[in-house]
Length: 149
Image (cartoon, rainbow, N blue to C red; front, side):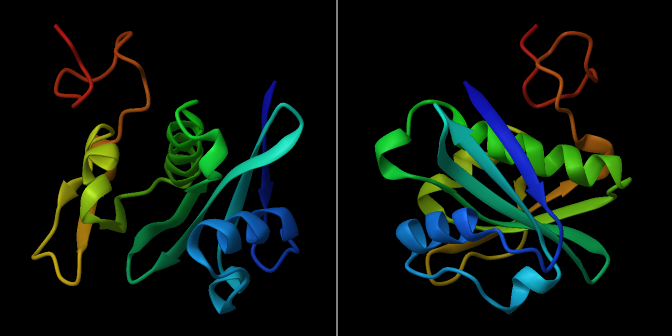
């Protein structure tokens, strides 16, 4: 069974922080005071996390992480969609993130496009709210990047 849980800004999301520590080598930080954290469980165990915050006129997504032993089960996709849904329910007009170059395709599947120049192996990416489409092509927008006609 797959489950998700949201933690409001400043909440103790210890299991999410532990995943972030294992995947990125860093756990809780000052951004958690202003970020919504999501935690995804797989088979009753914490498996994936990500966070969302508001800054400079945009929603930012970051620290999307899936435990290495659980990759390939679409938990990263679910985590990203949960973050996007949360932003959409808050009428997001702009969504931004900074992606490692080797995973930009993961974000491009849901409409993120490169924004500016990559630096240090990181690519800034942008998704406009009007282009956000979480539907899996069952009646979604005509120009949805996922649509397969």
